[in-house]
Amino acid sequence: MSSSEEQARLDPYTAAAENTNITLQEKITDLHSVIRTAKTGMLVTRDSNGNLHSRAMNPATPYTETQLSLIFLANNVTHKFEEIDNDAHVNVSFCDPSSTNWVSYSGKAKVSQDKDMISKHWSHFITGYIGDLKDGVHKGDKHDPRVSVIEVVPDEIRYWITQHTSPVRTVQVAASAAMGKATAPGELRTITKEEIQLTEGLHTK
Picture 1 (tube, rainbow, N blue to C red):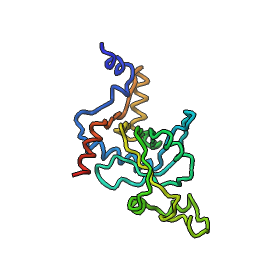
Picture 2: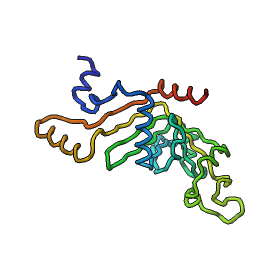
Picture 3: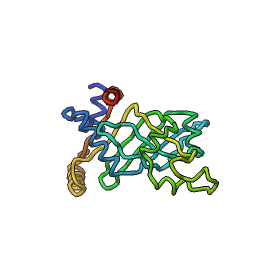
Picture 4: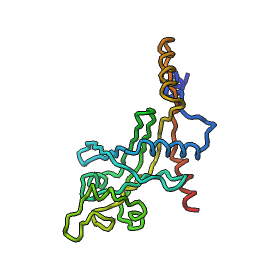
């Protein structure tokens, strides 16, 4: 028995991974549905001492059917920008407690003050986070020099999506426990680096 076969035997979540009958677009569509429902992600960065720090952030809603990057608008005077400058490798995770669906992005963060991108993704809620300093410059609007874009470009995306409602999942888990078996009422899916590059090719056409 190979190591991957042994892992699948010991871990029902691994055994539930990768439905080969699903298309890349179907995987992206389901990914978007989890992110939209969860709404808030945890952006994890690393400081110069190697410490990992996470904070809750809301990404801009995906604007295209094939979008895999995450876009955040944030105050560039905060520590996360220092940490991204130190190490661009980041993780962003989402979790929907009502369904147990989750998403994990591994990738690199790119920081910019692209005015078109800021304008495209601007929300008036951002003003509530950074404030108007009443100095005529730092007004908390989309022209405020503190506002920057954090674009997370994924290297790999993994997510879990359930296949049944909560009552059905509860019954499945209870029945499996009674029989001494494990259950994984959903699918663990991966969008690979190669698949991500395919979508990037679509954007450039």
